Image 1 (cartoon, rainbow, N blue to C red):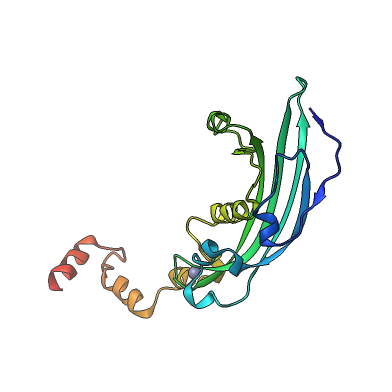
Image 2 (image 1 turned 180 degrees about the horizontal axis):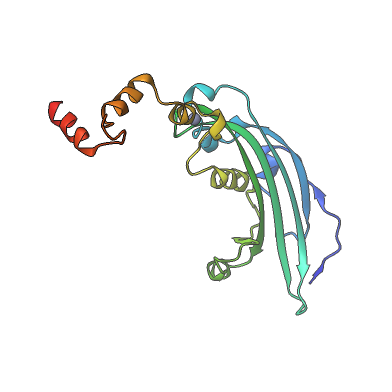
Length: 201
Ligand SMILES: [Zn+2]
């Protein structure tokens, strides 16, 4: 598969420039830059309320090209990268936890919805999208960031208070409780003592 040799147009890093790209013009594009997180309202909603006025940034990068198949048919392709670090609620301790969100996706832009629908879902290398005269790359970046969010955000074990408490040494009270269940004659845990204790309670 050969790549068509044309010079890529530079995209400005503004929301309006990225919201309306003519990918059907036969031109290819490249660009990079950064946006404040507030530019992505759906992503902002995923963050804890108290954190939403703090400033976080999203870095982005994109490149498009045209592959020429042996049949002479041209296929338009697009690669996007995006990177941000935002606080999400740790589902173990419910505290804020900074998470790195990374997007690295490739798409083939097809000309009809039927072709997009027929595109094999199990393709791990790229997804199919409908090509357009007014392609919204900005929205695609936000969609991909949302897809890249962890299903269950969590601190790394060593940074999670709840995890650290659960694996810490048992307390005096917990040790006393175990002592009560040890049969003084055998020195072993006696399940009958446990039953007796349950009844007394
Ligand atoms: Zn945690």
